[in-house]
Image 1 (spheres, rainbow, N blue to C red):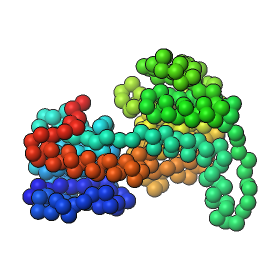
Image 2 (image 1 turned 90 degrees about the vertical axis):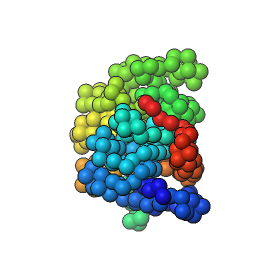
Image 3 (image 1 turned 120 degrees about the horizontal axis):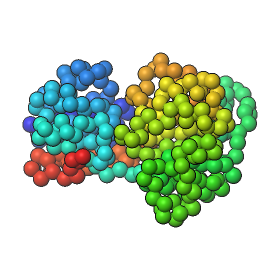
Length: 317
């Protein structure tokens, strides 16, 4: 039987979406519910597996790890893009990498949860409610404020539409901003520096890559209004995390809403966890029952197709 590892099932819910019984006798499955300690731990625990079913970028599949997993034939990830997989190394080993479809709307929805949570002080008010207090802060309205979007792709566009519905002025920048698309959405194109200086909210929606790695650093944070908020639901390394911590500690900016981090899971002693003006979520952008149903259903479809020698939804670059 083909040995298959189902990784990253932190919530222990994979079996609610996977009908493994119908595959009894065909595959030998093992579910991993916790993050691996390090790459050595990953390599040791996965050395006998021929297929990996992985959830987004929760586990890094590096070149060195791929070379250690001598029996590995298939890597199947949720979504059609996964920066944690070294695709070149997989290709060299003739390992087939496949993906699944993904709904983008949950990330846009979560962006607004963070924005609303910041302006209405949800973190403090919720904590205080459970301690018996009542109305301890004063929030802000969104109408008339400037929403600056870094990236106006599928998710950024959805965020823009909601901003417009709230009566906000929406501006956007990216290195490849589609001006006609921005015009259709009623979004004002702006260069990066002006967007950072004028926006009341800066929300990041570009794909992590060389050109956007470390995109927001100390200089950018210093240009922001002291009353402004930074929201990142894209990928952690787009923002220099150390610089952001310092900006929050010194109240250089009003606050940040984060769903992504340099290292995930976020270490329990990380400085961000102790900042009152940081609203933190554990990378929930894609975590919905609807997405999980798509992921696990199509992962099994991918696996079956690979075993039959007719792989589908192949990721090559």
